[in-house]
Length: 146
Image (cartoon, rainbow, N blue to C red; front, side, top):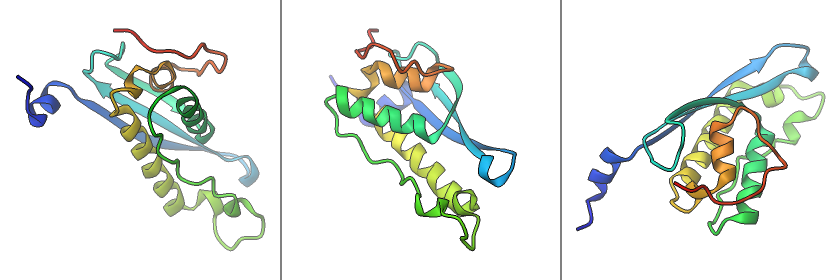
């Protein structure tokens, strides 16, 4: 007998949250880092809690890896905001508070959609992204075994 969806969520959970950090420096050297906080009791993940630092380019890497190696439809990332990086704008560009929050929410939704997919949960690149301090871009793609 198959459990109801409500029973599944109470038994297996996955919680992902992004916090951000803006590193100080001159305007041209500022960086936005995201802290990826994961809490789960899904058996496929070796760590039940993790916190790793990621940049937007790391999310792009994950998306590209999943599109190349997995059988799922990968959702889009929030845009790169190239126009916001042009000089002589009348606003804060990519450091404008509303843009930063909108992007953070988009990246969080991206991970939650992917990590909620049973096929994606087996992908080594997702585990590395969520639980390893550094991403080994020379890793061997494949599935994670329970």
